[in-house]
Image (cartoon, rainbow, N blue to C red; front, side, top):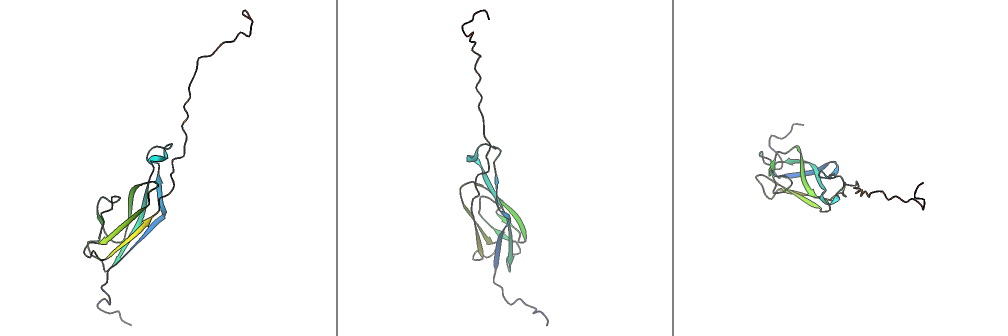
Length: 131
């Protein structure tokens, strides 16, 4: 059997999958404050019959705004507690698009902070002034 010289279909299709088991939490430099935690997600974006120039996005987690098909890309940071959807379009065909809903992980900052207040010692002679 010989393969056809021309493609049987010219329809564009984009696929996006999460790499590494899902979103990754980052304590954002504060190991004891979960309110400022963020998360990142690594995705692989592939295209069939897509533009040679790749894909585009207006996602705030990918400031470059574009990329080549076949790569792994880091999107984020996104605030912990806020789910996010990544939208990708083919660079030449805006009708060729895909979305990936991402569920926020739980906060990862879990340390504690102790404030120690010191007081001057209080002497109690227990009723014996000279002993």
